[in-house]
Amino acid sequence: MAEGKTATQKSLQDFDPQKTPRRNKYAFACAILASMTSILLGYDVGVMSGAIIYIKRDLKLTDVQIEILVGIINLYSLIGSCLAGRTSDWIGRRYTIVLAGSIFFAGAILMGISPNYPFLMFARFIAGVGIGYALMIAPVYTTEVSPPSCRGFLTSFPEVFINGGILLGYISNYGFSKLSLELGWRMMLGVGAVPSVILALGVLAMPESPRWLVMRGRLGEATKVLNKTSDSKEEAQQRLADIKAAAGIPESCTDDVVQVTNRNHGGGVWKEFFLYPTPAVRHILIAALGIHFFQQASGIDAVVLYSPEIFKKAGLESDGEQLLATVAVGFAKTVFILVATFLLDRVGRRPLLLTSVGGMVFSLLTLGLSLTVIDHSRAVLKWAIGLSIGMVLSYVSTFSVGAGPITWVYSSEIFPLRLRAQGAAMGVVVNRVTSGVISMTFLSLSNKITIGGAFFLFGGIAMCGWIFFYTMLPETQGKTLEEMEGSFGKFASWSKGKDGDNGEIQLAN
Image (tube, rainbow, N blue to C red; front, side, top):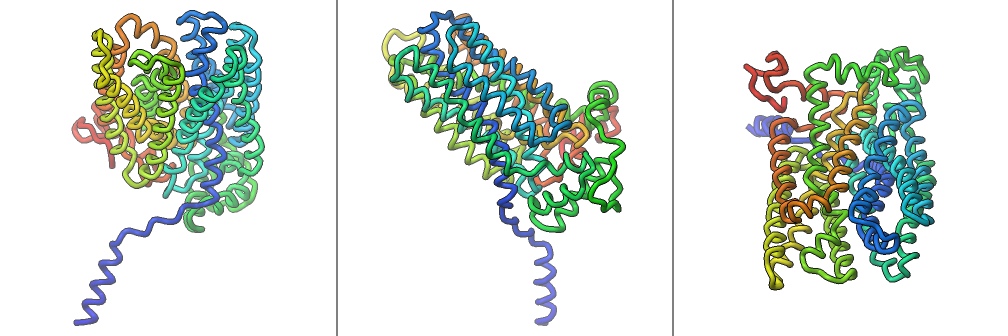
């Protein structure tokens, strides 16, 4: 009887879930160093929100010139993003990070010494190219170096550093606002060169991406990196086997250096994306571009870039009050992005994203309502002012806990190895174009349909985004990058009805 009971207990233990492995410290350090590139964008976004107050006064600019100055960097960054995919396949992920930091360093110095508007626009162009490189390469490198057990946690780091950069930018605004009009905004922009120097030094301690090394036939180096960044030797061997299969290298090959005859530097990628896509690749492309579009079209950069203007409309009159409230926005974003990093690999991408966007819809519609009430009231309504500030904080918090980090995690992990660099670059292009359109039109849009109407519009777009995410995005938590493709393509009748059941939507295996 006792033997039978013991056997039963053993058999039940076989079904117990395995203990979650401890965080891989080496992969953790690599992810931090790579993700520091995202500080560049975050700092620029944060610092411009306050700097434009003083740039407008010093250079005597119009609202349209300010919109262009703020938003054009997103379009400039497209150049860097378009070049980053091919560059990272050519010189490697690590040196592409160095290149991103070097370009932004030059741009930040030039912005800090700008004597006039045309020169400042040129400096924004240089900085924008560096930001484009950084936005594309940070999530790709982090995804490729991370073990599956904590890939979501580590790949969310770029968004963590974007938020950290935004907070630093807000604090810089508040600190340098006490200086003279001519010096203050130039110091705000010029200090952005400091993270670039730290990044260039830190990258020397990083290994190259194991997937890039395999693509170049350098199996011995890839094996060493995988042994350091995996949770066990067995996992390292399995990851190496999966990458070798994706790169077309026989699993039996154990040489340190091999000739990879089918190495693809991008020549056939665009045909596979647009001319002859499989149902899975088509689904992946739509999912990646869609999540980037809705992340930005819901108005996050309008709130982050124009927080002082929003708080001014809400009833905060002095520069100090507006900038201090903006610092609170930065703290809220940073705190909740840290919460998100610990939830991604526990809750999963899909439920966290849907909850996040639901909160964004509520916050945007309530913010639109409170600002409309303030706009139509002659008296000072303290409850409406408080509600407006609360909803701005609620919006950036719900964004940061899901839509912010998951966009970069999800879009960087779903592409197959052969398509990853170019696919990630396309995602960044959509992200930056959408952000550029929003940031270059927000002031004009607010003047046309009122600031409350603008946030009602953003709320409607976020609602459409929730529907898109619910119907198009399968869960990817816990899957290896090489098996990710199998989760896609099983939906809708336009997949020729062969991949789904009777044309019904199937989002997960």
